[in-house]
Amino acid sequence: MAKNDELDQLLRNEKMTDKDFGDLYEVLKIKQGVPVLQRVEFVNQSIRHAYGHAAANIFRDCYDPDYDYIIRGIAKKLRVPVKEHNTLRELEDKIIIEVIEQIREQIIKTKGEAAWREIEDNIMQEIDRLIADGTLPQDVADELKKLRGAALFAALIGGRIAGFALYIVITQVFYAVSRALGLAIGVAVAGPILGPAIAFVLGPAGFILAGLLVAFDLGNTNWGKVIPAIVLSISFRRRFEYGA
Image (cartoon, rainbow, N blue to C red; front, side):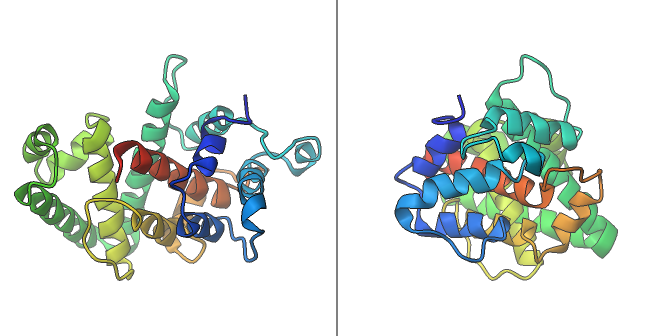
């Protein structure tokens, strides 16, 4: 499928902004971009060709390999349980949840459990604010009201949060982590600042990415580019889906 697969459709989405592409450039370590008319194919190729062996890329066009193939490869490399019946969306969610779990472990390892507890407290404060403001749909607010503190993360890691509720929690996790690591951002439900938050946390300058990469053999794929770019892409897909 490749051309017009989920990644290609995302990059062609009229909602993609210059800032969104800029965030992808950052995690892909692209210092000089291309004219706007060439950007979709350029980023398609930059992400896809970071996955796999350089020799194979000689015979690939900018739409190869397929997004589904890359997602399954990332899930396998992150040791995420993958079953044949898992949908692409399910695997995307599993990947982001696993990345968050590894971020949590890396922060506890390098900064201590108190630092992570402070992040958890900040996440709960922001979710409570969203509930109090009436910003969230009632069913999402009711679901999140039942999950407090450690229970929220147990539900997140256990795969018991889905849909818009999952998007809100993931958003607030990346906001809180990026603030804790020094990125100055304001409060928001979701939206354009999620991209910069993810790029900051998983970008080349951050220690979080380095911690993720030592967990497995790097092999031929440039996981330092592929994983952050795909996490960003998933976040954009959810943002457009929920109109945030």
